[in-house]
Image (tube, rainbow, N blue to C red):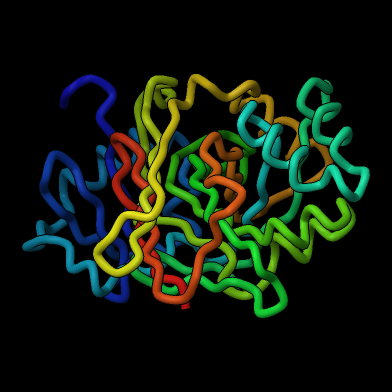
Length: 281
């Protein structure tokens, strides 16, 4: 296997599918929760595919979000671009200084994002709030943290956010962040032998009709926080019997005059993991 190439796990309507070196394997006799929480997941997957039957390929129409009993949490203000955007949106409410302070603080911002029931997967629809006029996607490397509080895998996340509600008052953050179909993750969990490279590029493209109305990206190396640092704070006083997902913040924010509208297609790509595509309802 090429150096630090991932094995990918897909949750589908036909069960668990594992991809390794362009071959796909059907996994039986495991629930999703027990499978992804196996100790030393990379080695476990390498053993499983030795005897698992090979299937023809992956039908994207069968994909589900890679989440069953897990929660999704999120980190904020981990990139400089995120800090400046949130300071700008909340300055009229007098909250801008909060984001400046948390960017440099020892304790990161961590908040609850979504249950599995409020989460969508690849090719499913995301939503924007009916009582919001300024809505953006937030492309984020998302960690799968297993029930031993270890980073066991990585996926792509879209932390859909209502910037006008968030900026009106910092106490409105839960309403701006957590509602039905406000979180998208997928298309897989990528499991690496070594930690993911900090040089991976996280990009986003928003299509309106056939026109690209926004695109941008950043490298993971631009994040101020370390990934284990975020996990340590999240798991200090929270237990996750089936593991959890942690969105790690965004370094790419559309300009202040941009908002998503119904019909927009959001494509988020992370090198070595894949592309998460969602349409705005």
